[in-house]
Image (cartoon, rainbow, N blue to C red; front, top):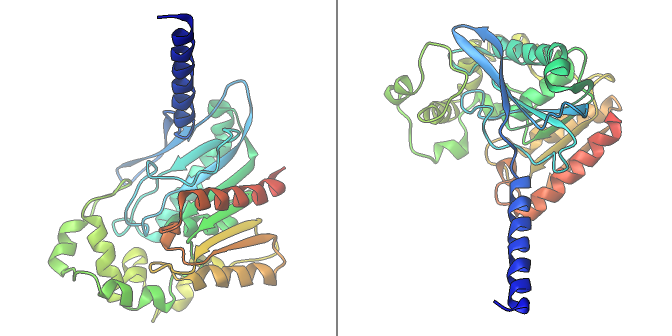
Length: 315
């Protein structure tokens, strides 16, 4: 190999190495996993990414979606930490219908208690600087943390989230889901059980579809009927609990969302405006649920815009 060929090969190798490092930088490193709570026979866990014993970092708490029925802390997350300047903590919680909504909210509250008490020592985090982010049901739980967590998070990012869990979109049969294959009661009985579940997939999606086809989600998830007990749901609807103390919030919603209506984020936008809460509503024309159908490059820009807004309020 002559000198020119050697230099060309070396340059190609360096470029390949840089490309590999760039690709790896887009993926979170292996997390540190902790059990933050044991309840109902479940060890409920969280994963922490990006902690550094030499650098005290602020925190992004990620809450996964899945209609409170499906999913786990291991699911995909919004890319909100491209500079690795936060510790990202992704939490599990017990899933419905085996566990009802009040206990699910208690799990979320206990996760934040663990973060405040154990996080500084184990992860070198700054618990005074917490951003909460989630999509779909994770967006709903994110909005819940705006008033059910003490101390309140510094800022919130809700993607395709919702502030009302008893509107017709959830408590009546969904036209969109009625167009999908019918789910029978026998299939439902086979898809969920009676014991605690904190990580769920597989057949559980059929149970969700059954709930949407029959307008039963609020009843199955809470054990209460919104038609006969409407007041019971007040503490679990963020849109009814906004005050001037609510954290700065970013709402992101696609106008073509067929799962969670765009109007849900629009209603939260109006409630936040009423109480002069700093907030930003990023409306995405033609975007589907959790920005399905939106180009990856456009999603990156949306996440960057959201993160820039909340960082202004966490400094």
